[in-house]
Length: 350
Picture (tube, rainbow, N blue to C red):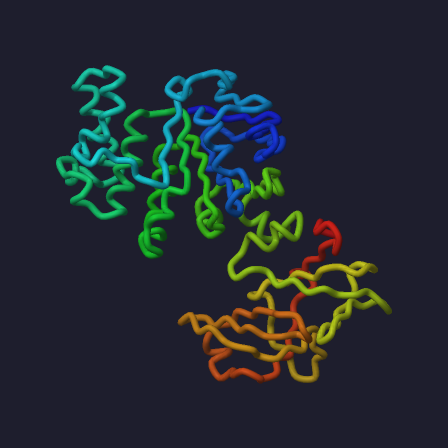
């Protein structure tokens, strides 16, 4: 096992397309770190530079105490699992998992031991003599992970490995990945655009946007104390509500919004759908909304409402909102402790 350090990493294509812009990051030995962000933010490029599949324009990458900038991928002691399973269709599971070891001329007995151990960890021992075409997508992804595990690398790299699976299988594989990390205790760097994957898997999350780190922290740190409007909007499902408000007379105002001012300046107010509550009788509402449409989700309902000309989402238990219909009035409040304020110009947290 090993820690991984990125020092001032840049990636520029064709001397003009600046994809990764000065990433500084330390990943602890045995940590499960997730890189998350929208498409094109540079997260996969960072991962590929760690793997040695992309050249570094500027900066250094260390695995343990060794700078690996000039090392060939096979010499970095990392293993990568891709979005596509990349299995050889004419080889059995056993042959696919052992191929990299065979190339390295590992003795057959030792190779068999590694394969059996990895297959046992992933519960695919019964599949070892099957061809990939005779397996489901989830089984093939386990084989791809097994091919990485047999190498016993210092660092595992995952590039959106679950994105080809259906929703139910993704949820199952998330649990299995987390269990795998706990069992192996090895450093894992995982790339995804899915913030639910990031929240459920990570020890720490790195949020990237346009090649720049926006915030690094535990899932709850990012959820409860986002550094800026981008992180606040990216982390959490449903997304945080944002309302433009003006400051005057010790209050923040917008059409349908009146709350005590935490900041004496115009700003963007953020509140999560789950933090909005109905007001008590004779209580003055913070938000006077009108129901636009509802989305029943079984145990919960998402209410899409309008506050003046601004949209507001509310998430309540189904029993609390089952009778709501378009056009109904909603009088809402939220604890001051769960409200977020962002600079209207640069989006930074106030």
